[in-house]
Image (cartoon, rainbow, N blue to C red):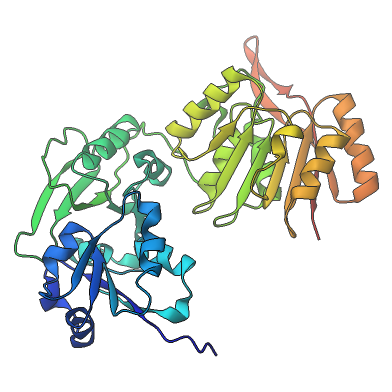
Length: 402
């Protein structure tokens, strides 16, 4: 058991200010020597004697500022639940949890769900606050209900445009502002034609309603090839689904996509698991541009695409949880990738040429794993009739690092 005594209190506060806190949390704020928070938080929490500190700029300096408060009665004010899409989690990763006491308040998600009459267990809770708004695109699905912490007054209009462009213009949108306070406001409308001017601090509720011709873009791997810009050299739909199954996307895990091309594997990896990350390594500028455009259109704007060729381009990258080698396979590339792969990491390499297949056969003989050949035939017109047209067979090698 830790002998460290807690000295830092992270207090969630709502629009009702001090009055909405529990007696214990209120006593902590009122007894504080120093209070750190945003302008809005300071306005909501009266304490005539405490020293006030605004969020540091740049924001990355926050942890150092907080550490400098050790030995004083210190309070950090945040909105709602300090550990639900909040800065409280970031502080907790930098400061020993034994030194912190968290004081949760009702979150914006809980308040919004109550206003909408929605069960939180049946909705997707998202944040685009200070993050790319396009990342919510991956969650646009028929009949889905989304609660979204927004970046500002313009965010609902941007999301309305995403919905409309994808055939979800009839989706019902509700903006909730200042929930729980005297100035609470509500704005309702459809995605198509959304024109409300809303306060900057708001939460958005979306009920996704698909038109008959809406784009169906599930988060399960194996999206249609037509959804990607490509010069034709991408990993095709059926092979991509099999590839992602062997790569095993997991929450927060990092993929190296070596020879990223149009980025289809890295993008689907990120869509398949919350907070999954991917780094695409691609030497050609035109393909990097296509990968970036695909990532934005499919809701993975944080897909990192770097110029280079393996193994040289792998130096200095964060250690991966999975690696896909879709191009440029060689013994040297494998060795550089395998050495960097974390324990229990997954590596998948696909080959379509006889030379690459021979390399895979040799690697399989040396390291084990699974070796399969994937063959896909598609029904296509043959004159006035229909016949099977074979795609190039793909040899796939996969293994787990133990």
